[in-house]
Length: 313
Image 1: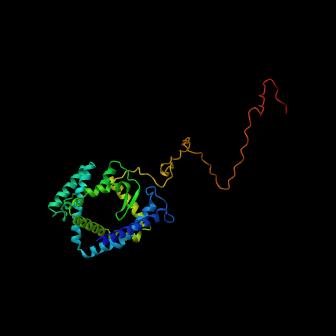
Image 2: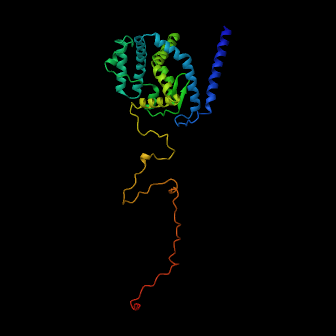
Image 3: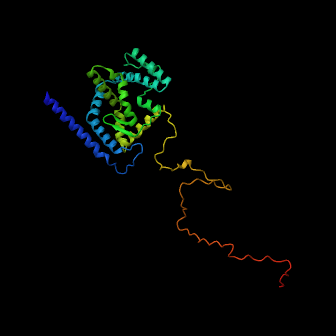
């Protein structure tokens, strides 16, 4: 027994060492030509974790999900998805209440009631046929609803894309899920495993399209995730005052620059932060500026007197 424990401990240490090596190898550099995104200050680490997750997915999760899709009939897979969706609706109801969204809370509540009874424990989905919209909410969205910033982008081992806020909310989501309250450890872990495989099988087509179309899968996944989370938190209508990441600090977008003054009107004096250089056309010459003569250096011409006769020609 002790030999098996030692062997398991050595395998765990080996796996942790490989993971640490993968992470450290990517922390210092970015791909050639890649520009750092302010939302992703840990891009070196995130790219390394992204590659690690891809390796795990290709070695384990994707083959299992592909076999699951090919062997299990579509109606059964739909029923499995409905069952786990019904469990998530219960947690969505709690988060809709915490976000003060009465319409979403009532929709989630009646979805759980109808699907748990008429839908045979959630295997069927009559609530959708009754036009009760599913409104997925989690604790990360609840924090964002009340102004908690998302923080830097962060890739979690195996779980994939996230942010600092969403990662901090994960323990609460796990605790709030009905699966987490199953007392039997074997049953609970089996439910988590089936849920992961079913979820992965549902996105096999999307990941294959991503691998074939995206020039940089990491950037595509990051931008898609951040945009989707922003839409989820703001119910599909995010505010327009989003920070611009393509401008330097203090720079004004071209659309916001003041319009030129109309002809004949005095140009408005725009505030400047620093002296501006005057740009001239290449090759153009400017005449030297003549020194201004002082009034005291040039004698004024005497005014003609009325008593003086005009010169005779």
